[in-house]
Every structure is written in structure tokens, then in C-alpha cells.
Amino acid sequence: MVITYELQAECDGARAGLLRTPHGTFKTPMFMPVGTQATVKTLTPEELYDMGAQVILSNTYHLFLRPGEDLVKEAGGLHRFMNWKQAILTDSGGFQVFSLGQMRKIKEEGVTFRSHLDGSKKFLSPEVSMDIQMALNSDIAMAFDECIPYPSDYEYTLLSTERTSRWARRCLDHHHTDTQGLFGIVQGGMYKDLRKKSCEDLVDMDFDGYGIGGLSVGESKDIMYDVLDNTTQYLPENKARYLMGVGTPDCLVEGVARGVDMFDCVFPTRVARNGMAMTHTGRLTVKNATYARDFRPIEEGCQCYTCRNYTRAYIRHLFKAEELLAYRLVSIHNLYFLLSFMRDMRQSILNGTFREFRQDFWKRYQDA
Ligand code: GUN
Ligand code: ZN
Image 1 (cartoon, protein in one colour):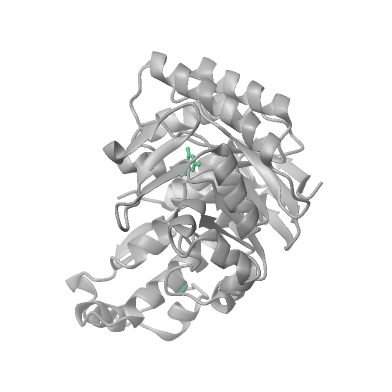
Image 2 (cartoon, helix red, strand yellow):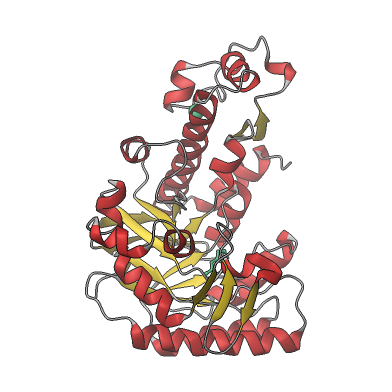
């Protein structure tokens, strides 16, 4: 097996473990910074590594359209191409394609769509997605699935979830490499029986791990937590669970509390470029006028490069002047914040104090 998960400790539903990949072992629970275009925006791989990133996510859809998987393969694979030496997980394209709205057409065989870059006609299917991901040679490939919109009625959700299971089978049948693992993706919308059925279908196929898709698509957090409760319980203990597209601190804590091991989200890097910093007490809009003469770091006590060297006033000035360093400095802080947040959470699981960690978090944290 290329990918193996080892459970090290459990505490109030939360799990601490180790995920072994061809490019090193990473510690879970873990947050994966997003490098859609084979780069985590504004950061070098060395900077990412130094702040504790052990695995990053990249996208089949984007690299397929540009520069094309053949070029990446010619470069020696995605690791060599982008100079990232630790683990890489690639998403299958089964999310980006469905975000295109009317620009796409779904059939049993696969999905036809128009490139958002030049309007040219393209096709993705379980087989094509596997071929692309094998060419990229990421450590973990994801099965090609349909992420259905919210809300979706029961009838469509059933049809789509059953098709996602058939697609998952086709992914497994087509995937042939001993340098990459393959995760299935659970769907089922907000319907508990369909989530259960989706888990059962995929667990029968025996994937290397399981993505949990179709969440954080517009439903309330209460619904998401409830659906999550009704998903992780049907997944095997000896495989990793990955909640896709989720990465705000509150959802990370509540996801971990429900047995999730891996997360990814563009949130920390996207909001950074809008001048929003993440802290233990919630969001800080460093662009705001209130910080014009504030000579403290973004977060007191933060050990990131940004907070050790720069003030809110300076970063605000950079944003006002539209200087590129602004985006870098807040991206560094936000990723450092999330990665160390996950490290602390993991340590609390190992120490048996996750319950206290979760309580402390909610005492301090204010949303919005
Ligand atoms: N990213 C966030 N949600 C999803 C999903 O449901 N499927 C896939 N493939 N990627 C996602
Ligand atoms: Zn910081």
C-alpha cells in the first residue's frame, strides 16, 4: 500500500494519527494549504515548509487546462515542476467542473465543459481524471465525483450519489500506479440515508482513504456538523478521512471533534489578499483605519515571520499603497496561524485534553 494511516490516539471523538506517503509522513489532524496552479499563492515552497506545511493540495482541473499534464510529466512530475518535496494531494476536478454552472453537461460517461480560460470544449471523466492525476504523480489522487449544489432535492441527490459511486468504481479500475494512493469521495447531499449508503458503497471498494465532499456548499454550520456526524461513523478507523474545502478555525475544531483527519481550504490565503488576518479571537481586518497607528503585530505572541517583524500599521500602509508585500505578509501569518492551530489541536488529542482545547477555543473565538 502506498498510503497508510496509523491511529495514534483518540480523545472525545478526535483522532491523532500519521499518514505515510511516498513523499514523507504527515501528522494528522492536518490542514493542507491550497496550491491550485502548482503554487500556494505568493509563497515559496521553502517558506511553506518552514511554517510547518507537510502536505499541499493542487488541482487536476487547473493543471489539465494549463499547462497540461503532459508538460508537468515532462518536467518530472508535479513535485519536481513546482519544487515541493513533501506530499501533494490532487483534487479530481469533480468540484471545479461543477462550479462552472451552465457551462457544463453531465452524462454517465463523464462531463463536457468549456474551459474558463479560452472557451474551448473539454471532457473529464473518471478515466481522464485518473490519467491526469497519474501523469501529475501526486501522492494522493481523488476519485472523480459530482459535488451537487445546495439545496438539491432527494431524487436528484440519489441519482447523483449513485453515479458518484459508479464513477468511484471506474476510478479504481483505471488507477494503476505504485507511486500514488487513491481516495474515494463520499457524497449524499444533506440526506443521512444517502450519506450512509455512499459510505457503504465506497468502503466496499476499499480505497486508501475517504474524502467527504458536498459540504460547506451553502448549508448552515449546524447542518454540516450534523451530516458530518452521520458520515464519519460509517468510515473505517484505519483509513484517513478528509473533509474537502473546509478550513475556518471553528469548522476545523468541530470537524476534528467528529473524527476528521485532513482539511483544505482557500480561505486563509484568499482572505489574506483582502487584508483579513486570522487570529485566535476571530478575524482582524488589518486594512481598517483603526489600525493606521497600531504598532503591534497582527497577533500578540504569534511567532510567524510577519508578526516577529511587522506592525499592523505597516501592513495597513502596504494594502493602502497596493504593494505586493502586503499579500505575502498576511498569507504567511494566516497559514502559520492555521498550521500551528492544528499542531496545538493535535497535541491536545495526544495529551488527552482535546475537550478543554475545544472549550477554550469557543470561549475566545468570535465569528464574522
Ligand atoms: N472540494 C470541496 N468539496 C468537494 C467535493 O465535493 N468534491 C471534490 N472533488 N472536491 C471538493
Ligand atoms: Zn503571525
